[in-house]
Structures are given as structure tokens and as C-alpha cells.
Image (cartoon, rainbow over all chains, first blue to last red):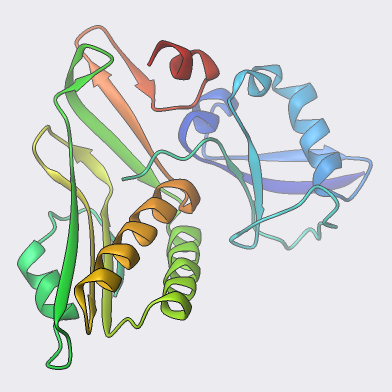
Length: 80
Length: 142
């Protein structure tokens, strides 16, 4: 199993119940992490969109994750 | 200058930052907090940012703008924390030799900040609160 520390912002902070959580996955891609997140927090599927950021940049699903990566959930942004 | 700040934004200071003797135009966008959303009274907004990523995304936006327009000066300042109606939430300022470029660059930067920068706002009403644009049904109601 791979274990990743995930930061949560905006509405995802409310849905996950905190600013940070640890997620365990079999795989090592962003898509694997996304699947694990959705199975543990089904409410995430109610969002208009959900991006995953790796090391301060939007990450595609096929990106490989390292345990040292800074990973964050980016629900629909609404700055301005 | 890129700034994510809990303190109120001094628009004149930002204009001074971007001003330049070779500029014929300074263009400023000031975003302010509205007192209504979906017909309901907004008591206040809570802004939150993923600060390190917001700064790096805004830097990329500025780089892109610099390739497309002859920017002489630029600044983006975004508030976080609690903001009441009427307060300034974001300021974008650019300077260029001529005015057309300044309008286009300023609009490109604020539009891109709104779609790319990881910043969120929650509207607080008399009867509840809501993260703006988070759920699809809010789009349909709007």
C-alpha cells in the first residue's frame, strides 16, 4: 500500500473533515488516488469539478505520485 | 508583485508599484464584495487560498501575459479572510506603453486568476452559508 498526505481546501476541507488527511492506495497515480478518495468520501462526487494538485501545479490523472509530493485537492475555484 | 494578504488592499500603492515613466497607460481592475448573491443578502465572505500554489499559478499567468503584451509593470493582490460587502477582494494593475494593451492584459490576468488560482470564497447569509460554485445545482439556479 502507498500512503499519501493530502491537503484539502474550500468545500473539500468540510467534506473530508479537516485540512489534511492520509489516503492509502494500491496504485501510485493521481487516478488511483482520486479513486481511493472517492470511495472513502463519496460526497466528493457531488462537486462540479475536482482537480488534484501535485507540488503546486494541476496534475493529470496519469502522473505518478511520490510519498514526498505535496498533494492537494482543488475543488471549483471562486477567487476574485 | 504578487500578494495574498489578510490586510486590506491599498489600491493607490499598487498603482504606484506598476507606474513607470515609459508607460502611457496604467490599467487597474478592482474586485469588490457584492451585498447580494442569488437574491439573498450576503453578510460577509470567507476567502481562503492555497497560498503557495496561488502565487505560482499567478506567476505563470503573468509570464503568459508578458509574452502577449508589452508589460512594463504588473501587480496582483488578493485578499483572504473575512470580507464585508463593499470591501476590495482583488486588485490587478498593469502598465504598458499604450492603452489598448493595458486593457487587454488586465482583463486576461483577472480572468485567468479567477479560473486558475486556487482561491475560494464562501458566502455567509442570514440563514446559512455556501462555497461559491462548488456544486452544479448552484450553477443551474444562477
